[in-house]
View 1 (tube, rainbow, N blue to C red):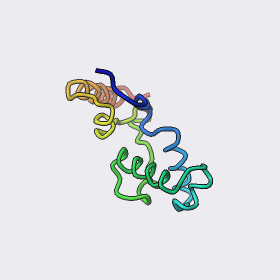
View 2 (cartoon, rainbow, N blue to C red):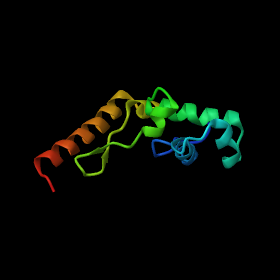
View 3 (cartoon, rainbow, N blue to C red):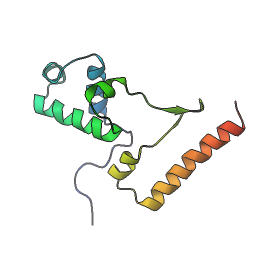
Length: 113
């Protein structure tokens, strides 16, 4: 059975969510973000909600402070479990992804650059 709708975006956030997050970081309210992006206030509220859910954050202040985590200066990004669930990745595949990430961390700790 085919899935409906848009396929999952390969990044943790969609391009529009990154735009909203940038404006959150500038301290703008939903009412201020909406006209800048040409969307409704409800649209902004939806994107903020999606950002909080994907990043597993409690509020917009935490979202504004959030940064991608880098591991051992090698650029490995830790994949949040919430993202794996959103991508409909089963436990077996999720385990492989996590094992690969941990192996990368172990490799960088053994052999520093």
